[in-house]
Structure formats: C-alpha cells, structure tokens
Image 1: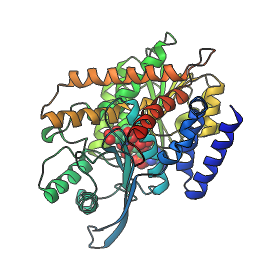
Image 2: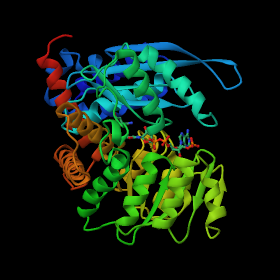
Image 3: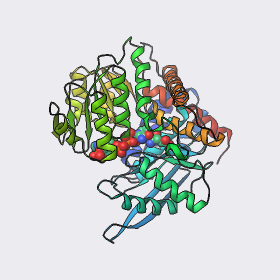
Length: 451
Ligand code: NDP
Ligand code: 2IT
C-alpha cells in the first residue's frame, strides 16, 4: 500500500475511534471495510479529498427513544428504542430490527453500516439502516410482546415510511413481532402500506421471505463450492443458531444432500451424528417457532443426539461451517479448531460472526470464506422483492421469488470474484464484497452532492 493511503487510513481510524468512544463493534465493522477498500482509494485518491469514508461512517440520522410498557403483572417497564438511518444514497433506508438485551448503539451502528454495503450488493434500490431495542422477547407472553411492539412503533412510526425507511426482522423479531408492529403502524397512520417487510402472506408479505436468508446462504455456498468442483452432497455441515437463518440454512443444506450435524442457541449446542432429516426439521420448526423452546430439548426427542451446555459447535469436525447466530461467535481458538479439523469452507449467515483474528486464520489457511454481507444478503434482497410486489400490488409465486433470489445470490458472487480474485487465484470474498458494495454507494453519494 502507498504510504499516503496508509497514513490517511490510520488517521481516519484514530478519528473514528475518538468520535465514537467504546463502540467496539462499530470500529470493527468500519475497520474491515476500510482495510478492504484501501487499494481502491489508492487508485482513486480524489475519494480521500471527498471525505467519502468520513461521510459513510457518520449515520445520516440516529433516533433514540423511550419505550414504556406494562407487563402482565402490572409492573411498568422501560426499554430503549433505536433507529440508525445510516445511508440513503441508493434508496429508502432498509434494514432489520433487533430485540435483544445486548442491543446498544455500537451494535446497531455496526449493523447499519454493514447493511449499507450489503444492500448495495443486492443491486436493488435500498439504503442502509438498523434498529431495535434492548427488550428481550424470551420468556415474555404474547400480550407483553404486543404491548411492547405497540409502544415501540408509536415512536418509530414518526421516522419510517414506504419511501423513507422500511424496517424488517432480525434477532428476536420474527413474524409475530412484525405483525404487531405493522398493526400499530397501520392504526397510527391510517394507511395499509409496505412500510415493513417480513409481513404475513395474507397481508402483503412475500412468499419465501422467511426462508430467504438461509436459502440464500446455501445458494451462495453452492456458487463458492462450484468454483472448487464441489457441492453440498455428502458434506458434513456444522450450523450455529436455531433461529430463522439457521433453520432455513439447515433445511436447504440437507435438501442439497448435506449431513447437518449441529444447531445451537445461547445456552449450548446439539450434535446429531446421523444428521438432520425432514422429520427432525419439522420438529425443530415446531419447537422453535410454535413452542418457542430451547435446542436442548432436541436430545429428549432424538436420544442419539447429544447436548453440550455452554459450548459452541466449532469443535465438531466438519467440511462446511455456517455460523448463523450472532456477531463475534467465532473467535481465534474456534477458527483454529475448525481449520485443524479439516473444515474447508466458512460461509456466514449471521452478521459479522467471525472476529478479525478468525478471518485472518481462515484466509491464511486459504479456506473458502465469505462474509455475511455477501452470503446473507438473500434476506434483505427478498425484502426488496416484497417491496416491489407491494408497490405493483401483485403477489409473485414462490418459483418467481426463488428465481430472483438465486439470480441475485449468483450476481453477488460474481461481484465478489470481480473485485476479490488474487493473482494466485485465491478469492478474497471480504475484499470483493466490500469494494463492490463501496463503489456503488460512493458513486451515488458523489452524484447527489454534499448532503
Ligand atoms: P433469531 O432471533 O431467529 O435467532 C437467533 C439465534 O441465534 C437463536 O438461536 C439465538 O439463541 C442465537 N443467538 C442470539 N444471540 C446470541 C448470542 N449472543 N450468543 C449465542 N447465540 C445467540 O435471529 P435470526 O436467525 O434472524 O438472526 C441470526 C443472525 O442472522 C443475526 O446475526 C442476524 O443479524 C443475521 N441475519 C438475519 C437476517 C434475517 O432475515 N432474519 C438476514 C441477514 C442476517 P437464543 O434463543 O438463545 O437467543
Ligand atoms: O441483516 C439483515 O440483512 C436483516 N436482518 C434483514 C433486513 C431486511 O430489511 O430484510
């Protein structure tokens, strides 16, 4: 790297850390992108004078608000609500809502920043945002979740709209929560619009949106594997998480012939030596989505499986790992264990599940490694397709949506190859995804002037 670029990037990162103290996840996400786009800045130094990185890393708007609600015992509860509207250069702000006790400004800024580049990669007209609350849906009654969602939306509704900002789900926000949020939005605004995605099929949702992130991960993986003349057939697959993304990644992987060995949650993981099948998947869907149970219960139903409390699944020998739970869930020692046990592909379903150290280990070992912003983009892409269907007031078949989804994942893969292929043929998907996402956002921002 030329010295002037290195000097600039070091100063930029120091300034970012000073301006956003303590926001470690945000520093991590920005640092990864900035590291990747250095060669592009070197070739296009006018972007440094344009302060494009400084502009991109400052949210256009951040809203933080009180969310008061009453629990089933009549006790008053106060949570904190957020919406980080990071970038609207490519379209209305778009990105999920996360309800989890760990939610804070740093986590939502990292997610909104990632979302901006991810949405750019999808080729659809969507800017980047993220929001949510430190509210924990686990253990709450449906009534409590509804009252929380109504209070949350009462404030959020002032800041969103079908052409302004279109939220969706993320951790802790699924079909139930989107329903309550949509109902309150409709009531407050007196309009039935496409302001949220992930809606129920009967009221404006798109077929395949629930499946889209997990299926998209597997479609992207198929493209990566095909480049090595491989496929899912007969491969041992380890998956973390047991939520929306993990469930549908598991279902698609097993349908493509893989042996899916694990699922997990924040309490531990289950290992099924025979692998999941359709009957076991049906049990998991029922357990997680209807009964809202824990993955530890799997081993009571299928006693050949084992449960490991308090552990992550990364020590289980596998060919392919699909982290689908949360950020920084693969640390250095986990990455070393994966490589040592013969894993040759890590394809991220979650956002930023691998720490920078872990990514370094994967890339040094020349693994097939893809960052979430490329491989999990199928979810938001299908949200974009839901927006399109809402706008034209039509409903596409599952086949139509699936065809779009496959094409989008294939196009994202091609973008990664374009900007990420090293002289020795190794594909650096991190650099490919970051540069491809960045070029479009940067160009649109420059076109639109200093706003
Ligand atoms: P869900 O809430 O449906 O499931 C999350 C799963 O991850 C649960 O099994 C949960 O376990 C586990 N998990 C959550 N937090 C932690 C933690 N701190 N440590 C260990 N396990 C944890 O969320 P999604 O499946 O929707 O999201 C999973 C990941 O995928 C997130 O990174 C999200 O940002 C990303 N993503 C989601 C998309 C979507 O369309 N939903 C699209 C693109 C990315 P527990 O029940 O114990 O909390
Ligand atoms: O991280 C993500 O891409 C999501 N949670 C989905 C966002 C969306 O708007 O569908």
